[in-house]
Length: 265
Image (cartoon, rainbow, N blue to C red):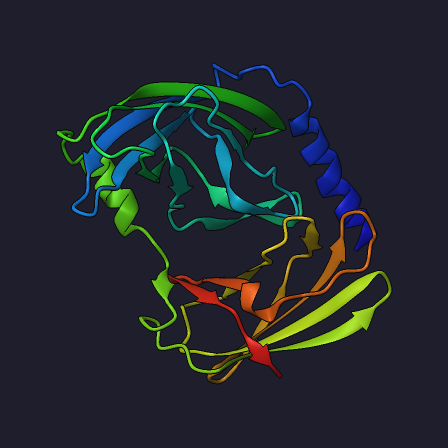
């Protein structure tokens, strides 16, 4: 576990250092989008990757580099939330990374500070891109967001390409059993749900970004999918785990499922 933790931390630290923009590998463009009936604005970030290159999801797996955003310089932006399209589980040197094998559009749901005033979105994204090697890249993008924008089919497709909710996937009881281990916590989740198709892969996330989560071992026994993982604080400090803040993403051949929280098991 510690070896995997140090490997991922090394990747993350490499990304945190000043990164040169890999303009020959990754480019970014802002899709201005449109205003919704509730006053929020849907825009999109198009990541255009060179042929054969891939990039990572919000939770990139043990072999991936987590993406980071900086919105400094934006105007009249009250809140902004990326809506990540369904990723794929990808083999990377014997480990599994989670991400996108090619170009991807990431929708952005934005609320203005002041309704009716122009919005200017200026963004910088640090991301990992991989082919034969993995390198950190930096892309920048900017544009004005106006209420009269038109729906873009690429952005609409990305909004539709989302995991099913627990209700849509007919998920039943979800329980988590926690056990102390040296330096952390072992978690075993039991998820009552129909198969998502093929060999299911489970990504486990916590509400605390300082908690490192190992790749889950998943197995199915009839109607129950079981996922076991281990967690450790990146500083080696003790920590409490809030079951309601856990998030499970099940990736299957037919579809993906987004599950929030679990009860004691």
